[in-house]
Picture 1 (cartoon, rainbow, N blue to C red):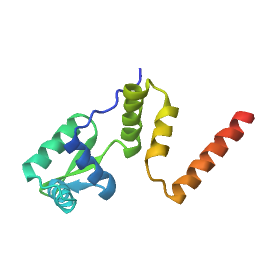
Picture 2: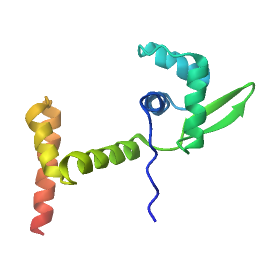
Picture 3: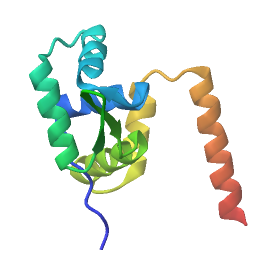
Picture 4: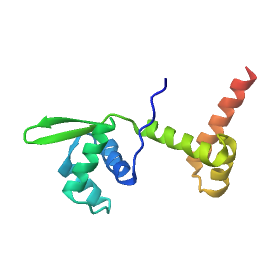
Length: 130
């Protein structure tokens, strides 16, 4: 049976982004990074988020000196994939093409984004011919 994706609330996701971007951190370090990102949260709130994330299996902790150090156990890519899948299912009945078209038509794509997209399409096209 497939492992069920971890459900993350907005605050938990903000904490995960800090851990993904900056590696293993203490509660205080996470709080400071959140403050630097314009999110004013109390130490106890960050501690609660980290404890919940640990219960969900999204982070692990180790005691170092007097403080616990938390690290991400799930990847940004796995969370992104499960959220995109949920969005596809909710809005597009699981079909990716309508969502891709919506994004391409309504979002700004850099020249680099367009080049990557063209390469992906070319790769998929050549694979389907083989």
